[in-house]
Image (cartoon, rainbow over all chains, first blue to last red):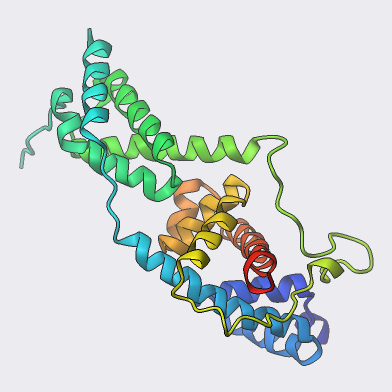
Length: 87
Length: 188
């Protein structure tokens, strides 16, 4: 049982990353909490990771609403290519 | 009940679908030139296989399904590219320290963190630089998951990867990004 609960720093930080997207399972969260008891580094990683998530969220908000359009020139080129392709 | 069969009309493809397909590609690969190429390839592939179009799906759905294949092909290409900048590992891969932090990659406390406001153009530029420094494959998956906020299942389906594969990539990307921001922003 104890062996099942023991995880490495690599596994702990992977769970921490997963939980940033709210996709860590309940059992994973338990293992992570237990890991924190003996590991200050991963605890620090988690604190900083949350901060990074905040930055990503801001970036996401700025990017997600942007719609990308092809320029008229690019469209003309494409039209020409399609015409040539069909001939 | 008989459904009307949809007939392809390539003369209208650019006006009707070019922007939609282009945006679809940019959102995934985050590269305008590459997206133009993918859209062009999609139209060409569409013309080539027009005779296979059964008229069951809409023209747009059909073209998007071709573009999806193009995105997967691109992902496979960058995934197999040899000699590309590999992500720096943060943990020992084997030996008795397997899974533990490599000393020089251990997170340091961010002394200046509170002074450095989040709403700051320089910070955004630095973050972009760090994301651009990731190996292409990591950047692509990271952007789809974190910036475009796609569902895990959707990314796995679109790139034909497993969920555990996705989390390994996300984990490596995030540890590398944390380190990059620590070195170039928080403790700089």
